[in-house]
Length: 125
Image (cartoon, rainbow, N blue to C red):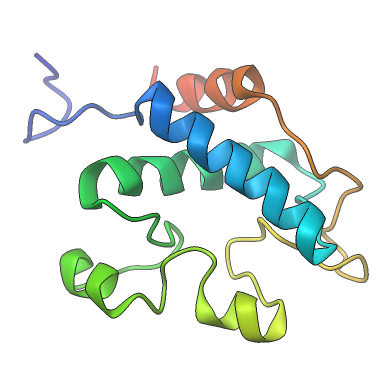
């Protein structure tokens, strides 16, 4: 049905995975004292990417990196969100979880489901 991709997989994540990753992101930001990017579009795209990987691979593999073998990376778990650099040093390559001293950190630790869908739908539509 989807002529834009070679596979039959949808372009966006399922609502269930998106809501799960949205809830995880909010909870994790609050627990770690980190903030979402000042540009909510970045936050929306990263959360959507995590949710899509959760649908396709079974785990929220970091969507901001290139992988030769995504299944092997999921198995290794190093880049599954929250990745090891984030857990160990609060370094988020995706700019989803930023410390307050980061120039790109906003003041938000929340984002709505509708904000994510409206942002990511514009990119795919």
